[in-house]
Length: 106
View 1 (cartoon, rainbow, N blue to C red):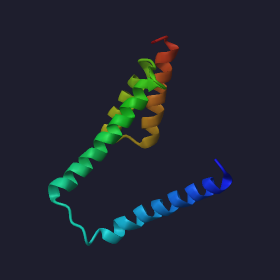
View 2 (view 1 turned 30 degrees about the horizontal axis):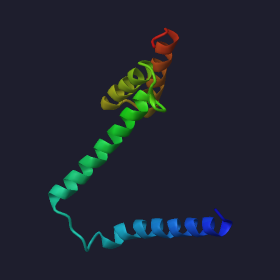
View 3 (view 1 turned 135 degrees about the vertical axis):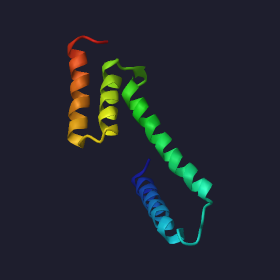
View 4 (view 1 turned 90 degrees about the vertical axis):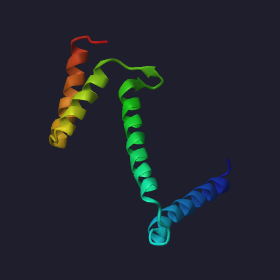
């Protein structure tokens, strides 16, 4: 790919990104979605985030990682559910995974 084509591609992507970001606030008052559609969009965002967390927790690349990582994620999720401070959630999740790996849990 030539330098000119690369610069053109970056410029087009930049303009497109700006257009999408501008369209949201600009069209918010003009376009109204039914309440059911707004609820589905909010739910779909949560489902997508949960799928990303599950994939990151279970897989290392394309293969199953180990039981330690999902256990750490579950500990972190439980603490987050109980509204523990963020630092506590991260340290507890990492500590759980590290302790299980130290104990030799596959």
